Length: 313
Ligand SMILES: Cc1cc2nc3c(=O)[nH]c(=O)nc-3n(C[C@H](O)[C@H](O)[C@H](O)COP(=O)(O)O)c2cc1C
Image (cartoon, rainbow, N blue to C red):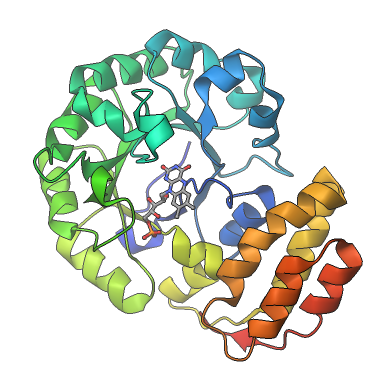
């Protein structure tokens, strides 16, 4: 089970990031100092009804320090889902109570769970009853919208049901990813519960990290988008001066994806990463266009070869 270090600034986490948090990126985040990295969110129904794509998201070279995040709304289906052998291999399981995506929310899943703290309680209680020593956490938002900023109430319910930690992203669900994450919403949760609180939202460098750490006094910190772009951000936040070679990162990432899933799937998956990894770099427009238009491995590698950029974060 993930153990929180007394020095809160050492508890760095790569949270679930659908479409990006594959096995290669998770391993990179751990390599650079994250203590725990999550698989992309999995549908509880997808697991229970045997959807092949759902199982693929669990692909790992090692399950050490990797967590699984589940979304759903039916306590008994979620309970069944976390008892599959392929999920039991992971020692942290997390309930997604923060996803703002319309098709998830309209099913009463993700951030819609925050509208019903009692349902959250029932789900977490059920998860704990079959957790078998695994840590059970909940990742939520500050609230569903500005009029329903009830993270404190939800976190207290999760704690009462036996949750081992909560992660709070300081935006409300209706903000999606716009505006700014509100550290005070996280701080209020930290003051209200006794279980560890992981703060999340807009950590992009040492300055934003120190600010959220001071303002929230949280026990850990989850870094999503900045880590997708530069997984070595974890080393930077830990005070280490590291460099990252973007050409190597993308080439290696593609090679690993190809070995695991084949050329065609790997080509589709790597294109999202190209956008993130090349964002903000000078003189990469043509390379980016060529890489995104690549129809096969040779075209992709030819484009990636032209990247010549080593960066800190
Ligand atoms: C493309 C994308 C996919 C995401 N997928 C998930 C997910 O599957 N589960 C989840 O709890 N949060 C998900 N998130 C939210 C992030 O984990 C994180 O809470 C959010 O991006 C704020 O953190 P950041 O400012 O460090 O990026 C996703 C975010 C993005 C941008």
